[in-house]
Image (cartoon, rainbow, N blue to C red; front, side, top):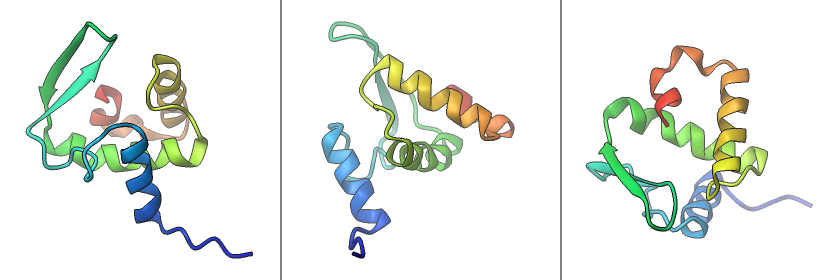
Length: 94
């Protein structure tokens, strides 16, 4: 059986499931990082982050690691570092 889902449809579903903007926040001037329900901070959405975050989001989809928990973000970060993103400084910031 052939899966009819496209990368774009998978990303759209991922963004919707994680309460992100339809474009994953690409057009936003800043990014919100929610540490807990009561504590969050913002940082600028710089171009290097915009380039890296698409791959980061695709990695979440491929690996199945959660995007809504510190554990999931730690797992995806370790996976990305292990897979060779060390030359992309924005990936470390994400």
